Image 1 (cartoon, rainbow, N blue to C red):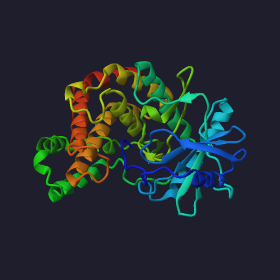
Image 2: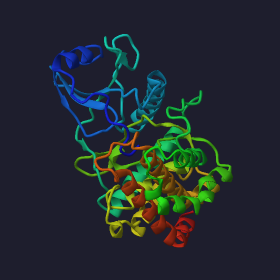
Image 3: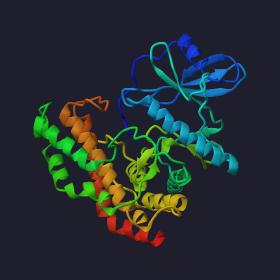
Image 4: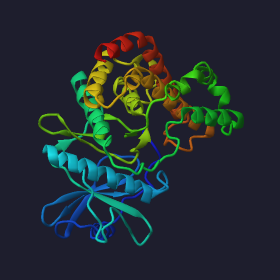
Length: 367
């Protein structure tokens, strides 16, 4: 979920608040210290240390983005329990929730704020940008393995934490309403971008019309959502499970193409720097099919290139919609920020389109 709504309050909580909240969870020992952790835009996170030396990640759940926190935590509870069981059987590490004192996987403080806690996984790191084709393979295989492992998740179906997240036709309808309303008076400034969307309306249904099965998907497959071993660089486990919900498997691959093949910033103004690296795409395809391949149907495998186009297109549509509506969703630092993001996505899509035939040949060779 790139650059989503910022955390709910501008300042970090006081130590006394964090000590009180941490004390509501089953930690090993008494609370000793807490400090801000990471650079996430959704939930505020803290590294908590107990007097036993045990460390944990405490997160304040952002209920503006996730308006059904109980459903969110039920999903994460089920997914982490399932993945932890499989990891234990294979001698691997996995993301684990710390239960609250009353046994639930979250707690609510006196102000009505929802909190959760994870065990800290030592000797790991995250990367903010892909560093090599080899790393593309590693990350894509991790997300493929993640999908494969969750193929055996018992029923019932997971909750939709963000309903319609990849409903691209509805994203187009929302854009059309934003164009008609022109709430910020910006439609005249975005004519080429609106024309770009109108020329590709058929792309919105490119995956929906292929009748692929519903899977459990991650829906935020950036490299920084894979924990890497600090020494070897190998994938340890997938993290940030807020958007894990039912969807099409190749949505996850499409988001990897969007976020990993282009090394330019998401709001890069120099569009000459924006292009999809073919060697990175090839490594992503190899890694993803190595991880999830045995689960995927032939239609799913043959749809991975189209997924890269679709998700890049969809994200551009979302940025454009927010720009036309007056920047009400994504944080911005300049008037044209969301329009710059739109242009970057659309230039990336053009780069994928220009290489589509070669990408399809690579995928066919892997199948």
